[in-house]
Length: 107
Image (cartoon, rainbow, N blue to C red; front, side):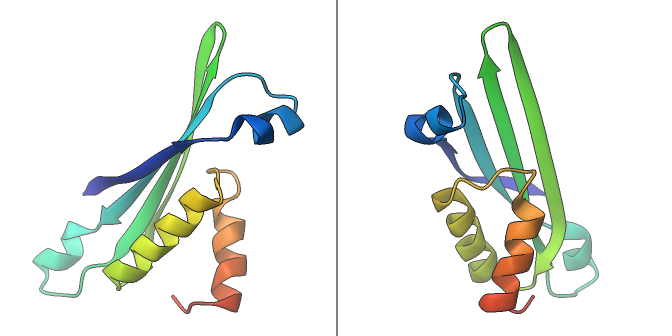
């Protein structure tokens, strides 16, 4: 099951630095793997990141799902907050989590 966690638009200043002049929305979802719960096991939590670019004549959507990230729901929420605060996109989420896990958390 996927539940909405939070969303944000990338700051205009950040987009301007990259010569992008259309809005980009980032959405962050918490994944709760119910199949693990049915088996009387501790639930595994994951994340899903969606990037939506609102171009003049087109809407482009990218997403990345990491279904099994941690057993700790509070930890997955901390990770989602960190991703939102840093405007992490689907393309970079795996690298960011890899770097982050080496410094701060153990999955």
